[in-house]
Image (cartoon, rainbow, N blue to C red; front, side):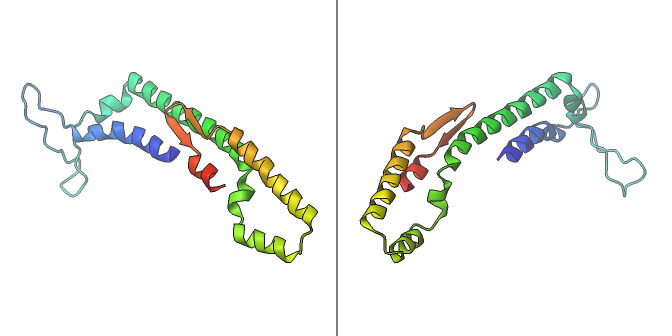
Length: 147
């Protein structure tokens, strides 16, 4: 997702290649110019060179890229907090239950397992399921509901 945001920022500036310059004193677009002959890629005079070199645009692109990096770093920290529960959603619940039942557990082992799950359930309930991180809202409601 971060790569998409960075690409969007870059494409915003590159989209100015579509805006052709006008010939001096007219409202007519400059025709493409061929440097070494008609076989080469034509040179199209657009606003791209001016806009992409503008210090304010460059500064804004860097600011946006930094904001995206900061937001995703913060989102990573938020999600790292949830990784301690990854065992619960990565394992096949039915397979874990079958394995436990095949071990012929005692009443005490059942009680230990249930109390462990109650403890985890309480920990999950105490977590923030939704977090607003800069311009991103991360919702873990589906994860909480599945656990």
